[in-house]
Image (cartoon, rainbow, N blue to C red; front, side):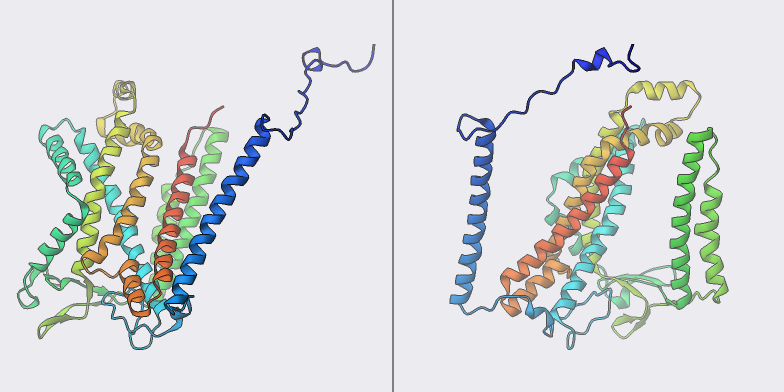
Length: 403
């Protein structure tokens, strides 16, 4: 007998012959290629027509094209800037960059606060407490039925109705509320804080590496090393040690009323606070419904089985239900994050200088309307794609893996 014999289960399996394409309309492969060529040609033709028509109209009106205006002195007054800015010397490019940072400041903080508030409200809607369930339900129904623009105008009007600085409301000894905004103590940032921040970042990376190693050891041996002592040491003790070694500076600049306004300290402008408050409250109403539906998507048997083991309702929700509900919640939550980011463009209605507001002022001064709109589109496209990529990565990470 031969040393090796072909497996009768696989010897009979033969690949189907590859079908060759025929240059005939009856051939589906040929038809699909022709239709793709036609569609691509139509898209290219439409884009070419729009670009050529725009260039001819701009040339007829003697409007210069290009982004050279970004290097010219802007002269735009910006009341709220996270970086240094002078309207007398800085360029349009720097002014637009400040607008991008202001947009990110609203979107980033708004996403975090809306997620926290929406999760609490969503859980509250399922509470066995009658009053809690009714109050959260009333909040969701009311907040989602009022247009966001009206809510922004309402909150901005309310903040403008606060007293003048001389009659401002005081919270403690260093926080003041007036129609000029919220004045708070401001930490004087020094070099020690920079190094402490670097140590915190390194500690977070080290904690992540240790967590992955602990998970791998658990899968291999069934025993998981404790992660929280390492996290406490790397993200708590290490930054504090670096900060203490560099002198432990902790000085605050306090706001002081001088004349008709405050000087010193940090300021949360009425425009920013109204925009942030409106976006958070509005988006949280939708997130609450997403969280509620995600929790209700978990089978009731999960609650009953955990309750039979003696777990309390809060522990069941935190450790069993919510981790499973994440797989249902994340995809629609991504849409709400994108909506919050795009809705921040309504800031122009209440005078907050985000990228849309500054770009509008720029195109009015320079006449570069096409370039200004292109900048706005590029900024929101980049932010939206970044959020989508991160949320898709996280969704794939927590998804169930089939075996």
